[in-house]
Image (tube, rainbow, N blue to C red; front, side):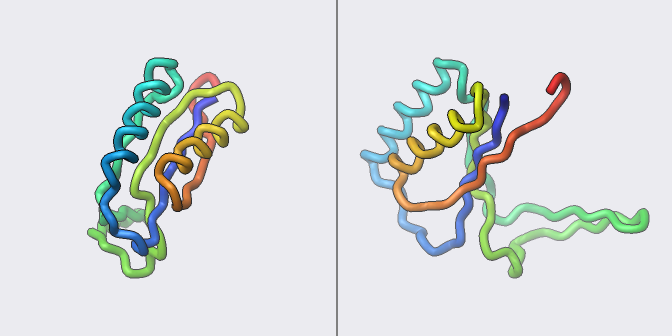
Length: 112
């Protein structure tokens, strides 16, 4: 089963990560990558571009979006056996980074 683990941000904490946290995160990423669990990870640009289609008309809007109370700022695509394993990995992530919020969603694709 594949899951997308997304980290959200409400812009309330702009403090840069400390060196010890970065070292621990590097170890976590290396461990999960070597185990074949972590398929991809990364941070996302803060503003983005919105695309909408309605009645055959496509509208493009560049961010930032004032109505967005929180945005996805990072992600990890993982492959595990169960949702519970995805939750446990997310718990490990937050033990490293501290306070925050995120969303875990199963990814469906060919063969699922």
